[in-house]
Length: 449
Image 1 (cartoon, rainbow, N blue to C red):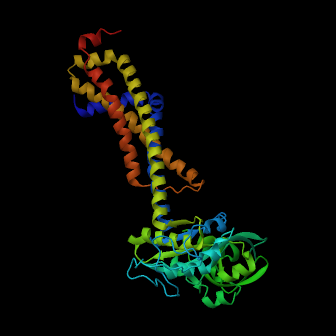
Image 2 (image 1 turned 135 degrees about the horizontal axis):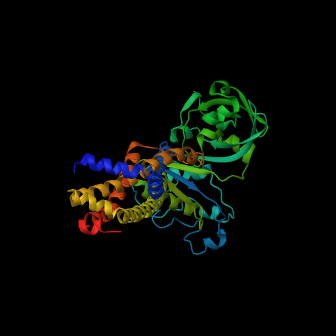
Image 3 (image 1 turned 180 degrees about the vertical axis):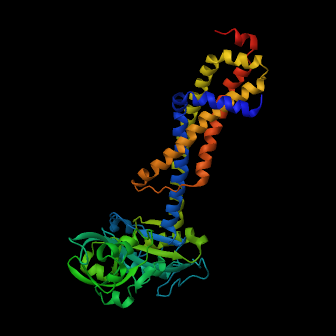
């Protein structure tokens, strides 16, 4: 029998049982939609992670502290010298303000003793708060650092512009080098200067989204006045869209003010800042992190700080994304298996119902290959129908999923893979029933009731 005649028989059989085909392919529909969405959500998550970290240097290290320190009096016992001495591996710094002073090379000469920091004066603190002096010490005594800054973020009420009522925004107190370290570009105006910080001036830079929400556009925002905690601030500039998070701050939605200004008018001493430093060589991030920990342990004995670098954060985010993808893919495989078993059962029933038809086809000269091909094509037709419906379902669910702030990136490869899995499932699970049908003897098939 010609292939065209076989395909015509397949089409007649499937078209006459539309309801049965649709119900049989429900499992394939779900599996196909799941496969497509798994790939789309996974790709969207990867792009989201890449966007979140695209403005961070791979060598950036954030240093934060939350909690209370252990009493310093007890910690001083047993420490060498009245000043506590240097921890193991950090001797030989010496005083002075020159960065990396006391190091004989990239890793430094660590021989000798150096009190250096006077841990005894910091050890009696019960509450720990990082400050500018800590940043200076880190920059002075940790080798292989390119730059460093300190920042904090708080929520404060904002008024002015087109706002009809006071609204809470993230206010970020930053230094003049924050923009350079975070690759923050301005759409208009200039970023905060060192003079702004020294003079505690009430000026600010608006994030792109904050500018649109408060003034309607960056054009109207520039050189205008906005009120933070009822105090007027002049808008010195508006940042470009970033779509990233740096040092725990979302630049698009934040309002940047000078660090010293924020301490004076917004937070006082009740603030937990973030120190961000950048390693000169990405390959030395781990070593630099170790040096920072040693410096901080000398300044704050018995206190644990959190150090996290951009590369580790990104890898952790991608790892979580991969785990989620594997779980969703496993679910899709299970759904496909259920759908495939459904196709197999239906084809077994179909073979039983159409035994006489098989006998007639064999009696008029159809071989085993023809019968096998016919039933196999029927299985593929059912699964392909389900796969196409699954793709359409996936397309329909995409805007619904995006409403939950989940990024979905559809792709042609995802659609083709989804269709391919559907066809593969029909072929695998339809083969045995088709083989069983082809193996029937003509006399047995014709005499079947």
